[in-house]
Amino acid sequence: MRIIGKIIAAPFVVVLTISWAILTFLFCWAAKLMEIASGIAGILAVVLFVTKQTTGGIVFGILAFLISPLGIPFVAGWLIDKLDDLNYTLKEFIAN
Image (cartoon, rainbow, N blue to C red):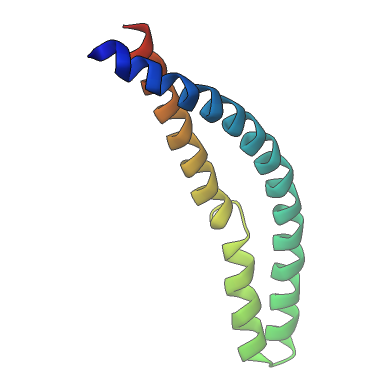
């Protein structure tokens, strides 16, 4: 019965390996672009606060946090790591 599970799991390992590699590559480029955009949004938030436009400053401050490395890219990196953990678990299941 375990051999059937291993046969079924093999295509998933191939798909997860390829998708993990592609997602990691895209994540690296997207993270760099989001860092640049975060810096621009942070500067714009400060400028809006200085010019007494607090609503725009708050909005751009929140936006700068979300696209900073501590926001959405952190969650995306965590999800990619969990995908890699799932891939490793399936490989261990097939190997044993």
